[in-house]
Amino acid sequence: MPKRKMNNKKIQSLSIQVLQLKDVSFIQHIDLTNNLKWPLCYYFKSITTPCFYSYVARIGDGYVGSIMFRISMSVMYIDRILVDQSYRRAGIGARLLEEGLGVAKKENAEKALLTASINNIIALNFYLKNGFKVDNIRSDYYSKNEDGVRMKRLL
Image (tube, rainbow, N blue to C red; front, side):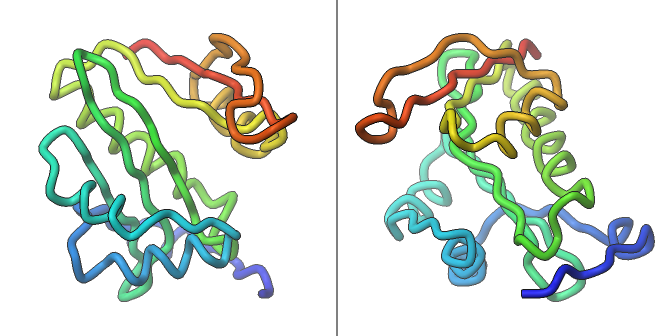
């Protein structure tokens, strides 16, 4: 898929909204184009469970990304931030993260935690750029020989 050229006006028209049932198929499509396949039950759980939070990023009628996280005992656990490949490097991931962190602060979370694959350099750099620090390495977290990098940010 060719890269779309982003202009400021398009990004300014970005809206972030709570994920609804009607949005799930669009977000699943973004997942699949990024070689991810989250179980359908996770999306439903994120919509119906009080401690789960899910938001979608849209430009006009198009879906361009999502964030999903949980808050438990003053900790925000980021499960995922995903931006459509053709909209990356335009600040959408940072805007989704900012929205999520704002919600977490309102819910009295004191820190945000996440784990990313040690091989996912793009994600690791994104989180480092956005104020996260490496907390520890989790051996074989994802699969054999694929460690996870646990990252933390104080709110």
